[in-house]
Image 1 (cartoon, one colour):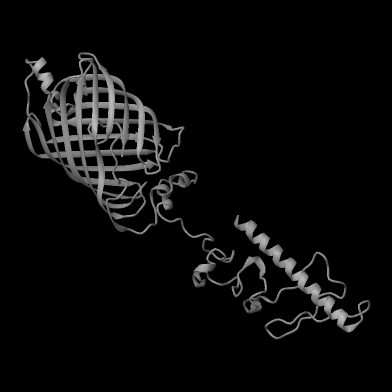
Image 2 (tube, rainbow, N blue to C red; image 1 turned 30 degrees about the vertical axis):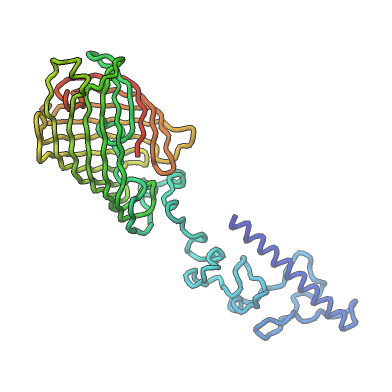
Length: 397
């Protein structure tokens, strides 16, 4: 578009110059009364005060154009005169773009080393679609040059939930079949949002520091009775940070587990346990590619009650295309391993795969297959082995 605009300007200026020159030549011939044999008149005077002989003794050529003033005189052109290359009046090819007024930023000389167009404003500065089409490493997509500012209640997260972890805040529901308990209906009712940010205004992939709050309930119902068997709760407040492909979080969370009243009434042989954790958590994640994220997390409980023990760890990988998908969507794959001290640092492994749809703010909706193998995630059943196969629907912030 820019090249076409310059070509149109050059053609227009050449045509205008031809018309002016021809009119001057005709007027001079008429005044002298020697239209047939007259010597061509002098080239119209310029603002520099000099006169330049007309470059030809033949009639004005139909394909040529009058010679332009020397390079040193181009900045002295009259406001109405054109200049080569579509430059604005009073601008030489050697003029620095930094000295131009704001109104001529787009018409900067093509010989300048700087960009012709200004940088994209936030949040488009780190547009995933643009970066996805460009070759290069992950920093091209994940790093922006935007200014860091204070923002209250920002949109977007710097440290997002692990896709295959069953104890992350999100909206989700899944139907799974187990060997010993038949069909179960597990859900997650929660969210993670930002309260305060010092960083970029890019909501899709922000950089800087952000203070979040999170909370979720994890109810389990049996089928077909739909009695609430158990419900775990989590509430936390992490401080998160992201620069380039690296993400970190440090925070606090409370976790507790409770049996459902209806399940206790129909299963009087079940003994309730008190499962409580008050923990500090440290997480680290990195992107090996825009779609591939690796993570690891350690949690230490400074207060435990019942059967809970202080240490737990989790690690895994998420393969999820980062750009907005549109209606067609895109595939995803995720794996998570969760180890707990109360299980002698055994635990469980979860695998999820399916189809995803991502919006322009980074929010993610997924539909897919789930496989779980290991000790139960439900705190009341922490020492029970489960193997699950099912399908689920998940919405991540």
